[in-house]
Image 1 (cartoon, one colour):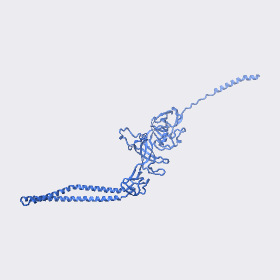
Image 2 (cartoon, one colour):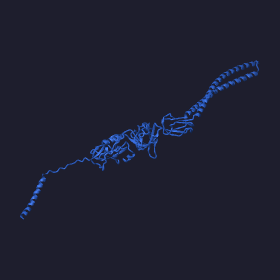
Image 3 (tube, one colour):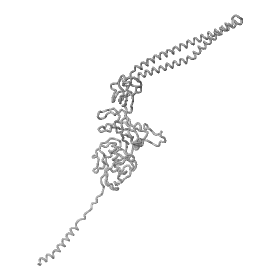
Image 4 (tube, one colour):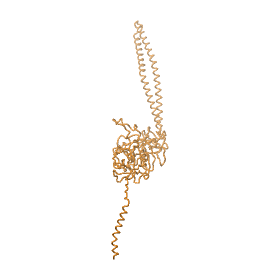
Length: 488
């Protein structure tokens, strides 16, 4: 019993010793130091704002039409006696190729008759010259006779005073003198009208000359030649068929040039001519025409799958009015020598009706350019000097394919965020990484060079700057509409 009591009395002592020991051990430990971690923010991809050379461009579509189309019609009537064996739709023939012949027998007969009449008229003119000379000689004789008759009359009148001649002889002499005067006057009248007679005959000769030339031209017109190097579009006659004057024979398309008419909006036209004009124009006549402006180049390709070949052209004219239905402007692009370097299956000849995609480019200008997808309802996310997010309201001048040309709201050297930020909290701290891939992509795209970049090669782990796969300088209209709402 006493042993149990001793154990109970010693238990508090052990507890006290344990508490003191624990307190002593705890007092000997050094206090834990708290490590302060500096927040540098989430990593994001950015691109630096720079003034870059931008080639404004517009994409449109249109169909091919030959720049030159000719309808050959018969200038003379007659029966078709010859047709070139290759005179068929689709054939290409060189210039000066004889295509058709019209029976020329009637025209040769007309020519022979006209030549005969011309020769006769020339002979008659020569006869008039001889006749004029004869009249002049006769007039001299008539004057001499008249003078002799005058002298004879005077002599007999002197004899009459002496009663050596009768009055009847005087009367006869006077009648003879009067007849000679009449003959002289007749010769003078013939000489007076001779110039008119000769002029009339010369006019007749000229008329017959023209008739001969017309007959010769008619004979030449019986042969129908290819007026230029071109393609036969349609043949509307056959051998032995009678064709009337003005009847359609052949339709020909020139192959040295083609035209594609495409339609663009006024907003797109503004994009092309922006920076071309200087100052104001008080009169419409003073406004430069297309030929006076820096060249608007164009690149065309078939709007069909499997055809990647391109043709180069220029804008040669612009329509004079807007379409009432589409509110667009007609722009005509001309391509020289479109059928050079034909590769069957890859680069076909450009034929009427082919549907083409047309990319029109203007001379380059300098501007701030950012990827189009960095726009968020009129705002662009930029990082300030402390790398904090700022939502910046910007004014877009125009969209250039996958790029947006900024007119106002950005400054040189600022960092535009490429990464999708969800949520985008203004003032949040981020760690920027300049994307050289996107930098190169923007530079290439702005200058109009075709780029072919895989999105996985340039995208950050957080889809920072996904570049569209196989992105081109323009992109389709569907891609443009889906990437953001166009500014009006």
